[in-house]
Length: 512
Image 1: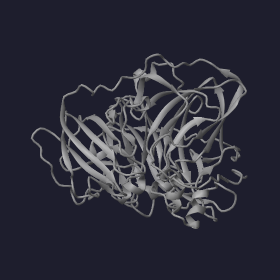
Image 2: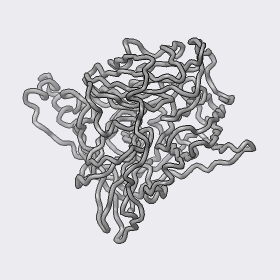
Image 3: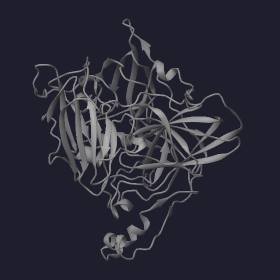
Image 4: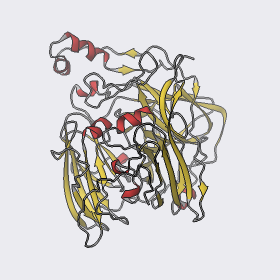
């Protein structure tokens, strides 16, 4: 079945100003400039029900830990008519199941790598010991098994998992290795928010892909893109042209920008308002009503949208509100207008949930005693503070139990963002001003607008290891893989920075 009609590439005038800069007087560049705005509004055949990732089914070991078996494997998927696409997935051919656990629970994993090359699983947004983090130092070799185990110790939130092998993260995510990890707690369970998984509480892993003429993923960098791959087709939970049948007035959408480089500026086709209720690290104190929400790769948000009986409306991505300078927006997807998923409301809708007046706890680090301030400048494709990633170099150590403030700046005219492992941070200011409402909750990934300073406050608690580091990096994966990443360790009292063990791989042994 055809997934969509032919794409419409919007042509624009290219006189002086931006056009002249982009074209440089060259007809070839003019051609690419003209066709580099992608617009799919009205061109998508929403003819496939939205796939909802299954919930992973754990067993219980004698200690009471909930044990999840995850099989990383290759496969094929019939995304389009013709040859099936070669893919990777977890417990299936593409993407993985949603893992769900409650604060205070002990979770354990048996991660088996069934591929013919090493990979890993990183628990993005999770607070946990560095040896369980799944970063570059916990790569699982072919046919190896990794067995991390920890106690979930953070508020309810929408997290995710994805590979993190050094220099190959983008390729592995693009092949299909990713999934959601939902954390619950007693406080969120006591709220009357939409919470019926797959019915009025819907995971949405949003990714772009390019296909070649043989229906295989094309991971070649886009023309003049400073971000790498920009696909011209959007899938949600691995579904092209998805629609979702709405049966309740209020629907909670757990939005994950799971793309390797594309920015999304979410809104609906009729510009209806919706409520942002949670950011990366959990529920906001109060909902924020808006009609646009911009997420860079790796960021998550939970929104609640209201529907009327019998109506249809499309979730789409609008041109970027911020993040680029001059013509770079055009070549990096910042001007694109993309239809994503159609929502079809039933003639009768259940109406039993609400958005509470108060929800989560507000970030509380603005007045904390600051032990250390650090500055980070991201530049080019591969540098933070003028250095590229060295797996054997620990850049600095932080003290357990302390709060630090990191000032982070994008020194370029194109997009970067900034992700820190292990912690959720508070955005204190953006260029000295109060952050916008979408950045006032707990975050672990933030888009960096060019030439803008972000002050981030974070507390390092619970886990120490002088030898095995956590990562900080740009989550534009071509930048991360090129070296835009660094490492830090959390130190206990009296501990000093150690050395990364040469064999810091969890290839075929446990991590706990």
